[in-house]
Amino acid sequence: MSSKVIQAMYNDDDILMSAVKETRSAHHHIEEVYTPFPVHGLDKAMGLAPTRIAITAFMYGLCGLSFAIWMTNYMMIQDWPQDIGGKPSFAWIYNMPAFVPIMFEMTVFFAAHLMVITFYMRSRLWPFKAAENPDPRTTDDMFVMEVSVDGNEKELTSFLEKTGAVEIKVTEKH
Amino acid sequence: MYKFSKKLKTLSFALMFVGLVGIVWGFMNTPSTIEEAKEIVAKNSQDGHGSDHVETVSTHEVVDSHGDDHSASHDEHVFHQLQNRPWSALYVAIFFFMMLALGTLAFYAIQQVAQAGWSIVLFRVMEGITAYLPVGAVILFVFLALSGMHMNHVFAWMDPELVDPTSPKFDHLLDAKKSYLNVPFFLIRAAIYIGGWILYRWYACKQTLALDNAENGDLKHYKRLVGASAAFLVFFLISESMMSWDWLMSIDHHWFSTLYGWYIFAGMIVSGITTIALVTIYLKSKGYLEYVNDSHLHDLAKFMFGFSVFWTYLWFSQFMLIWYANIPEEVTYYAQRFEEIKVPFFAMVVMNFAFPILILMNSDYKRLPWFIVMAGVIVLVGHYVDIYVLITPGSVGAQWKFLSPEVIGSALFFLGLFILVVFTALTKAPLKVKGNPFIKESEQFHY
Image (cartoon, rainbow over all chains, first blue to last red; front, side):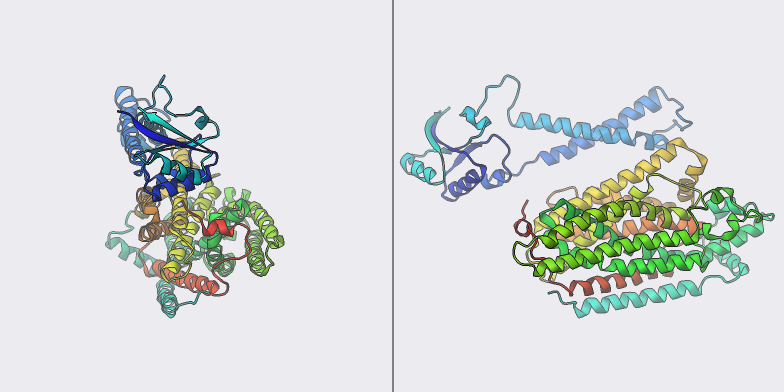
């Protein structure tokens, strides 16, 4: 099913921010906003649910930490114990200080990479995917706000013009 | 204008009084003869504490073992350690509260030089906290001068016999450091550091007050302030590093670490920022600082979190390299701490690392005042124990006792003095600076 949307274009992030606030307080439904760069505070202005990526990052970090502990124990204590600098290698805990940098790096590595992968998956971004943005100029210097039309096309168009939109287009969205 | 509440003033005097009682008790209970010292040690070993001290490694015992009769020299050594105890406890408190003001001053200068927008509404709070610096640093200088006059033996290297080639106690390692580690030069250096810090604080406060009364758009005083802060930071980073060698590292005078200055700096700045946060939250709870919002607190808590991790990073870097290399002259420092003062040593790592990282990690918690207060109190106590662990093993060795009247008394006395000086200073100027070109950004700051 397709629905009618109005795409209002802005050429400044501050104007966009105030337009988003006005549109929301006028009880129009914002479908999506496309911007060439992350606009600080836009998610709050749009009323999006807070991100949960920080929680996943913490859990990925714990996974990395556990993996590093298992890995150092397997490599350095169980599989091939070596006498390095006269340090005891009978138990993992005796050699623990030497493994702290590895534990730290693995924590960061897991948290960073898995967080990026999670972000791509949640944003439905994968290689060779067709771009979703309605206008190529949103990757350059334009900001597009998509507002759904509910039989009030005329009224909405004049409202959006007043919010500072430089261009307004009514299209069908699939 | 802030008004020093009667309740808080009474509290500060009460703390000072209770602290003074503890300090006096500590000095009254030090042994005055070697026989008394033996009695105290015998009593303590019956209590189950300190009974294993005979076998432990101490940098000073190496020196003393040159004596003919080891047992007699050991008794004398313990006697000196016990005599040092109240002095050492006093020194920990003097240094710690001076460090809070100095760390705040450094943070303040960084904010000025960076021309940071968010922190301007907190400048007067920082200036109030740094008002303790002249008081605390002068008390510290008096303490160092008393040590130089051999009133106490916190700094073992000050003993002239150690550099006397004819003495049986002659220490050739210390003799090689004589040109740097000698009492007159030590005191001259201390005077230069302290003088420089106090001079900057005085000048900066003068300029912000002048800026308050300056005409709109007159940036003369502002530019002077930024310039002076930049010059101060250069002076501070050099003097802070040397100060840490002089006032803390030299207590274990055979041991050295090139990371030490940074390590002390990390502890200093995190304690300073925590103090700013706690004073800000207190003033806000009393209805002042209405323009300070939770985004300002959030930023302070972020700094507390970040610098706690930075402190741990330096603590661990210093420890791991020494542990891994296992060179005898370096490793004795940690061997002594692991054997003699294990509980405070590990407790403070937990308090300064595990607690802040777990409590302050969540973004929402950094905006809750009671959460910041809880984390802040733990961080401050943790860094107090950190300073205690830096000083005490070198000055009193196995005779340490953390939960004793002199240690707690010293802490309470200087806490009371700190509160009195800081909150008196806060009444002297309006709590909000004027004339700073970025003040609007600070008032409207939001995350």
